[in-house]
Length: 271
Ligand SMILES: [Zn+2]
Image (cartoon, rainbow, N blue to C red; front, side, top):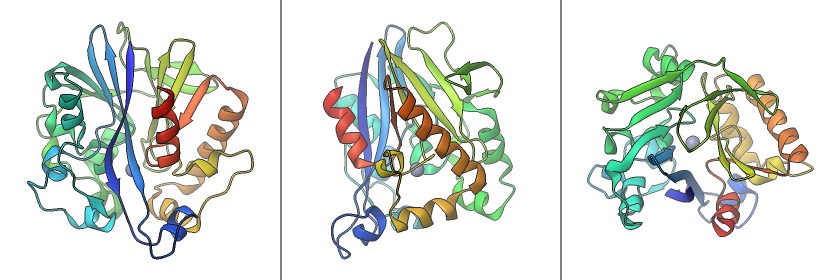
């Protein structure tokens, strides 16, 4: 089994020092969209999709929220483009496992209409019902018409003290959905076993590597962003504390989030 770390988009909002606590105030920030591609015996598994190929290749104008995030289209950068560049067949992506359904994580679903899409059931419910104004703004369900959803319940098994549910039973890739609600109602991490180690993709449960440092800290721009985006901020902060404790108690788990360039670079080098 082989695991690729894919950076599927550059988000460059202004004021890097405010957003990331480094670089200049007038410089754009550099935020990644970290996805995983697992090459297993039973085909390819994608963990998060990033934005769709139409947006990344400039075939569709950027919607307002993508412009706000400073998305820079770049042909070939989508998950679809990178899978092709690796010499792999996108039709071999049989399963997609998502941390949540915000468009920077699920925007690429229409590029793989043949794949089964595994998501924590509470998230699919939130994205379908869109009960609040924030949920009506954040979820864009129209392109998901033909998606082959596989919603998963929360109950299942325990993984290092967290609830977990096996996304792909019987598959050679051991992939668990680990509910981490807060950022969205059904937000989850995705744990992938890799030999004796685990990768834990935490999605948007936190945003920057300093939040997981021995003495945690967070740049002010990201404190604000995370509060504004959270559906339940207390739950989000509780789960962030649990992840911090997990990372420092278990060196065999590589804990990382979707948007930190430092974590992406470190894991890409070690892969
Ligand atoms: Zn995100």
